[in-house]
Amino acid sequence: MHPDYVAFLASTPAPIHPDDTTYAERRQQWRDEALAARGPEVNMTEVRDVSIDLSDHQVGARLYVPPVEEHGALVLYFHGGSFVEGDLDIYDDLCRRLSVATAMRFLSVDYRLAPEFPFPAGLNDAIDVTRYVAAHRSSFDLPDAPLLLMGDSAGGAIAAVVSAELRQEDLGIVGQVLIYPTMGPDLVTNSSKQYGSGYLLEMDNFRLDYLRYLGDHTDHTDPRVTPLLATDLTGVAPAIVIVSECDPLRDEAVAYAGLLEHFAVPVELVEAEGMLHGFLFHGPYIDGAWDTVADVARHMASYVAGR
Image 1 (cartoon, rainbow, N blue to C red):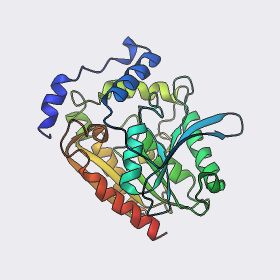
Image 2 (cartoon, one colour; image 1 turned 180 degrees about the vertical axis):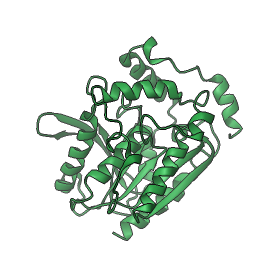
Image 3 (tube, rainbow, N blue to C red; image 1 turned 120 degrees about the horizontal axis):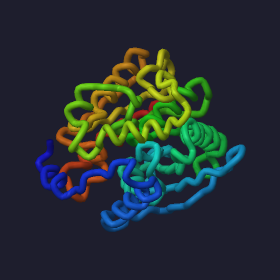
């Protein structure tokens, strides 16, 4: 574990058990913490909130245009938060930084959250928004832009499933970036045992959130729930899978990278040595937390160039 995390963990309160609070309180607490931890605002050419009209409801999103655009691509970003937390404001700083680092436009998607909207509501939002953006590229001032799907943790699982579900449709998806993704609610791996408690992501709490996300959907072998159990991933977009060394989700993400390779999908596996789950949020506290981003940006650019 990176030595900076020793002090960081010592000063971080233990996560509250899901039964001891409400989701509204958890969301507000994370929002307050995220906004308080922001450094100087990253300047962008444009930041614009948009509303995407789907068949029976609207999904909010936020478009980021970096000062320098080199690749003419649009990245759809699906945030983390155990399928029950997260919003556009919490991820505003991260999306700004990633947009600048990759020199690509980002569209952060505010998909519906459980338990108010259980599976597959949030996933369907992500699928429908991807289709909408592919059909309305000019609304984002990039009429011929290739698309990349990107997400972290729960959002990484969403990005993976969207990539698989839409692989037969000609939407111009040229890559997927899965950042310390979860690959299913029932997976037990060496890393989940080694780092399952005391390393920021508490697996007991996480599995409770999963159950509330799934609601009445009891088939955990459904590949939309457990992507690692997919029986065919032929033809999905090339992938970058980013894992944290000291993360309970590390081994399942590595296994998913191997599953993609099994189906002849080009994969780049990037390990952030010594990092914990959520390390992209820890740049202000952990030296080197952003060291992998330049490498990931190069891979993303290569996917766009080789489309």
